[in-house]
Image (tube, rainbow, N blue to C red; front, side, top):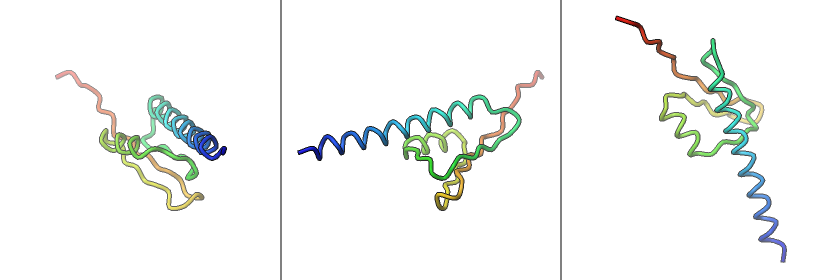
Length: 84
């Protein structure tokens, strides 16, 4: 009787957690200066669409091998505009 409601609640919770992880990583990318690598706990979850979009924008994504390992996001080098 409650199976659908419980599944919905659990799926919504997972979805909200993934969105929060993605927002946190995007903020860290936005405000990271002086380094090109961001490490996150291997227990964090990200959607496949989000990871694909990062790769398409030049971010190298290294997935953790297990939960004790880390996610590693290597950001593209910033190119400064120079006046010619």
